[in-house]
Length: 69
Image (cartoon, rainbow, N blue to C red; front, top):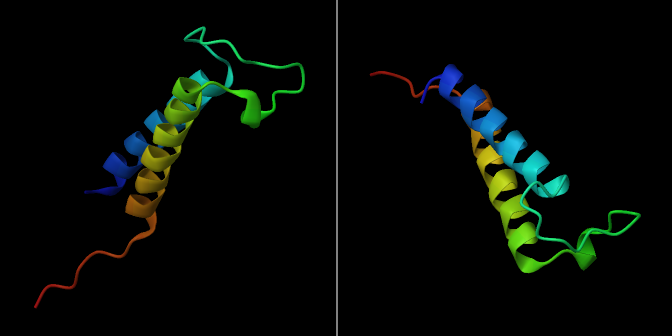
């Protein structure tokens, strides 16, 4: 994957994290102090998926290309 693909994956991951954090899906469970421990499983799962996708995108940005023989 090239650098542009890494940027795209990172931005998609960050967008999914924002969707979970601001509760766009309306799953409820948000408290006044936004404690993650009180969130429903769906919201926590979406946050986790966003984190994994963002980390994959960041890894794609920093990994060195394979050497050609």
